[in-house]
Length: 494
Ligand code: F3S
View 1 (cartoon, rainbow, N blue to C red):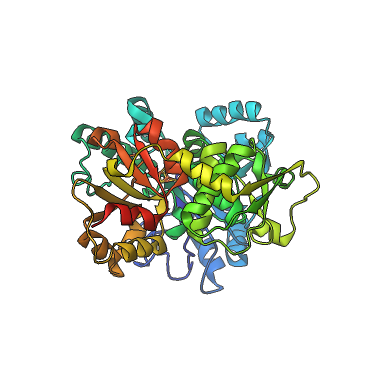
View 2 (cartoon, rainbow, N blue to C red):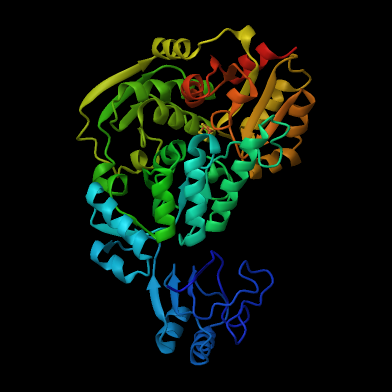
């Protein structure tokens, strides 16, 4: 099988590549790499139209790629490949599915292909599609334990990911740089580092976030994607109008390795129509209100796709992610539509004919949800944790605003969990400094659920997140205080 060389940058055949097929443009991410004999994935050629001849020339000298996988219909590369007798595959923005029988011709390792075939029987799929973007869960040592660590290390000895877009990672069990400050046990930290090393060797991007779409890694809405963290799945399907099933951490990794994934479920238009109408009869003011609404919806829709009416304003990114994360946690909602707001509902590409029943969510329902998720007293709080899903820069700004000029009470730690790229923006804008001055911390790569907070001896956690409030009691052995950001901060500061 030819080694895969993949980039999202264009290539100028005239001056990015030398006569031996080596990328010589120091600004190119493949700088110094040779494409000779490899499978080259890239979007299209840039620059001079004599690029076709340059490519033919490389082929004649034996320094051309063995195969080119092209994203756009770029005539320069297409004609160079035709005259140079180079295998060519066009992905296009919406790649064409292939029949299961064609998998054999796709240079997929035999054992990986067998796993795909086995899964295809259970999933009843017959078509596979080139994998563009994946997001891979199963990164924290707390969630995958020794067996998961050993499996990732084993896979990293044999395989590399071939997804042509991004293969990003979900949060790990600790801030990879500041785990000591987080009081993470050293034995845990060492194993977590081995997991990240194995994933990096596999070729994934260790973004360690459940909000890759806030850090420039936006899973393409125009392509079928294979994402595995439930809040990312919900956000991409609902807020962005992309297409993904809720994959397991293992399946998204396997598809990234194979370079092909099955087309089924929410990839298909006919499976994306709403089934339950929900009238929202409550005012939604805070991120926490959207989380509570999501939680309630997850509980009542029984696995069906909801269609929300009565949401009378455009939700923010943070509100979308709070709603989707909570609905996915309480009821496996992978896709929801909001009348006049979410892309498919707005463009009218879904049919409302299959709406089976009508339900409502009232102010009283939201109050009851909030009461139910509160399992501990405010005086018991030892940890305050925001950022589930990972906080955006706007959310960090809001938290910094409430903390400005205040101090977190003694005996309480305050975490804001976010992606490393988001933190660097918050650092630049001065929000991190304000939070730290008040006694809080902005941690990256992890969150309050997948970090071993129970081993750090926290017993009660306050959060504004419906999803975190769902998992903290059992998975993290925490009493929970669940409220909006402002009220929590008022409670824990002096
Ligand atoms: Fe993300 Fe952790 Fe919440 S992975 S959605 S912050 S539980």
